[in-house]
Amino acid sequence: MATLMSATVQAKNPEKLQVYVSKVGATMAPHGGKMVARGKVAKQLNGEVKHQIEALFEFPSAGAIDAWYASDAYQALIPNRDEAAHAVYP
Image (cartoon, rainbow, N blue to C red; front, side, top):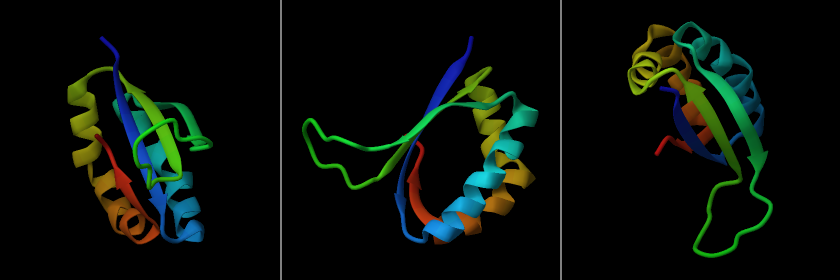
């Protein structure tokens, strides 16, 4: 069964974030992952929102998400991600 993964992103360095965004999809593909939607937070209905971007990804299973996150390809991007943004994968 397909499994969804969400991400919230608070940009720290927009230029480095663009580098990260341009590379992350290629790390997901071998694990069957793909982006479903991405957009800027335009309106807050309630609560406190500190992030500017939300994204939704689809993988074939929760195990595929774990394999992607642990992969050498994605682990190599984490330093860039951490410099570029505060990203949370709840």
